[in-house]
Length: 276
Ligand SMILES: NC(=O)c1ccc[n+]([C@@H]2O[C@H](COP(=O)([O-])OP(=O)(O)OC[C@H]3O[C@@H](n4cnc5c(N)ncnc54)[C@H](OP(=O)(O)O)[C@@H]3O)[C@@H](O)[C@H]2O)c1
Image 1 (cartoon, rainbow, N blue to C red):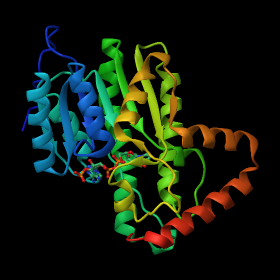
Image 2 (image 1 turned 90 degrees about the vertical axis):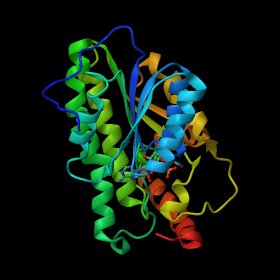
Image 3 (image 1 turned 180 degrees about the vertical axis):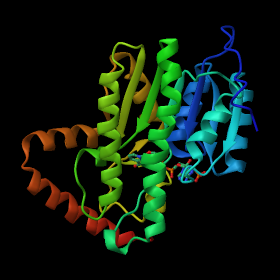
Image 4 (image 1 turned 60 degrees about the horizontal axis):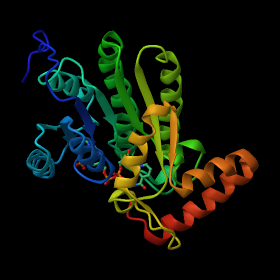
């Protein structure tokens, strides 16, 4: 275990360094692949040692970077501190922090097991807030850094039968927008990345089967669009046709109508495939 009292000395002749949570698969793995191809050294975080180690070795071989793994359950109360300490083993302050780990829970709120809800609150909210509180001062002091919080278009609107997921993602959107403003003149960029439905394991885990056969974007498209948007410094980046449609619907349709409609669609999709 590294010692936080003896931080590593920052070197200028090394690759940029990114911490990516939820990197074992899906969108997090896509961010990791893209950053590795751009010469970033990485700290890949999730609970799945086998997948993380496999990805890390693959990225090192393909791109000549260094990829480290951190086996962490981000629902644990000391997760942010663990991440901070492990990251300092490699760099004083990362160039990029991507808070991507997360999962969905479809169905009626009262049917969800309390421990699973608590897990979501920890992974989506507590660990993200605490991690940013730990990493951001170093970025501000250095005058550069990027924080990407992977939220969702579900964070733009209350969603019945997906209530706590949408609310935690709304928290991330709000928090990111506020931090982006606070850090505007510091050299730090904060982005809430809001993908629409994306082809990953997410839907199976969440107990959701899309009612129709609408096209989904790939995880690579999400990571690419999110990173490409960084120079614009937009605090909220919606991704895919669903992102555009949601933004338009929120602008033009009455909120009560929208909430009822998305609730009906979500209920239908949950019933048809729920395993949650
Ligand atoms: N797919 C979509 O349609 C979609 C749309 C909008 C937003 N998002 C968001 O995108 C992010 C990534 O999701 P995805 O689609 O890539 O899903 P995914 O393929 O299921 O990947 C989820 C990742 O989160 C990690 N994770 C979950 N709980 C964790 C915990 N307690 N501790 C550590 N890691 C944990 C998983 O790691 P391990 O299981 O290996 O620990 C995995 O790496 C999530 O925040 C999700 O809400 C997804």
